[in-house]
Image (cartoon, rainbow, N blue to C red):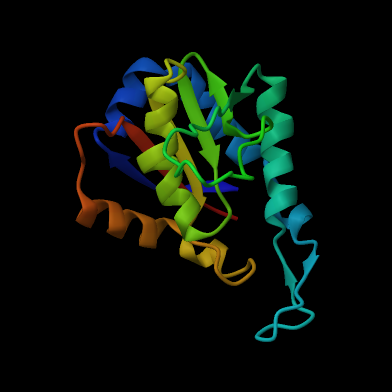
Length: 189
């Protein structure tokens, strides 16, 4: 695979290059080492493309996992203790369970990385919420979001979002005071 595009959200590219050059080189090597053709293993059951072979997001994520974990990157899981003081006194919530958590795909040297081959809302959540939360918890300082460009996303299931759409929204949203620097990499086969 290859890096086809890059967007700097809140000076993310500049700061990641300055503070995490070695880690960024590992991410670039990881991307180049993934032979996407090995992961076109998902047979579509969708009405618009029945039987068509597509790239498997799960298998692609596993390829990133295998490479990055071997280089010392770790998943970071944060337990969620949901508050219950906001419920009405006569309401007994059933959703307060002990197993809830949030997870960052990869963390190394306070750099958080998310690899996202899913729906659009997850890309926005990763950059505009999750990375800020993990920063506030003292886990990361900057982030990298790895997403497919449109040409790659078009060869996956319907609804997979892509770099161009994501960047357009971030540019029109703007940067808020709580946003952390994030480098967004658009990848292709």
